Length: 334
Image 1: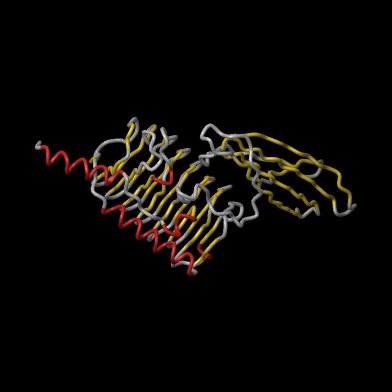
Image 2 (image 1 turned 180 degrees about the vertical axis):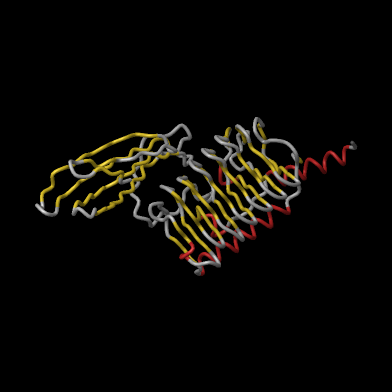
């Protein structure tokens, strides 16, 4: 290869690596969708949630899931979707620095660049993104159709790489496998599915379809220059804790719900279920503590004759059942 060709290639690579794609107002959103947003379980969104053109009536699972302010078919949601579409178009137009079609991202260590898959892509195991000491390192993954991650797959940042500079442009749909620890903003032409226990430090933006989640933790990408996310307006209490290994203070998220069940024999059970999560700086849930206080009352005598409290610390994907028992009734209530 002639010197001029090498020089031209080097300039193109440097230009691509240092490129910046703005998410605009979409950077404030943990989740954006067009047709529906569905959550099962205690999904936690750190950031805003928006849907357009469908309305907020197409959002289900919040509560018990929690998020920042919800924008349904309003000017804010419309603007965010427009900005996400602009970012998608810009990402798709970038010239690839490497073609990985047919390869699995698992086991790779990649420097900044634009990585292209002509069709579908797969992540099994761990993908390491190396910033090489440059916090502005820019990572883009382009998929002609789909991206799928296997169970417990992960994306790991080292040497200064930042989640806000990682983008996944998906020509069709994205599926994040159970317990995947993902990094970067996913902008999919169609739908996004996050299976149980997924954490993602970056937004999930579905341009024409739905976002589906199951007990996940999603953090809005925010701005690299700002270094912080906008405040959430949800009724979630957060408190700083000791610094995590990622250098970002973890937080505690607490959700309290009450459920009352009445039997035909005039017995009433009231269950207060408190879920406390400790989430590290990457949005990954470390522990979940569920405290279920079960109170059974006999309304015939107006006496509170049975109170039980159960506290259990479990992994994020575990299921915990609290049980109320007394001489007249035994039932599972959570």
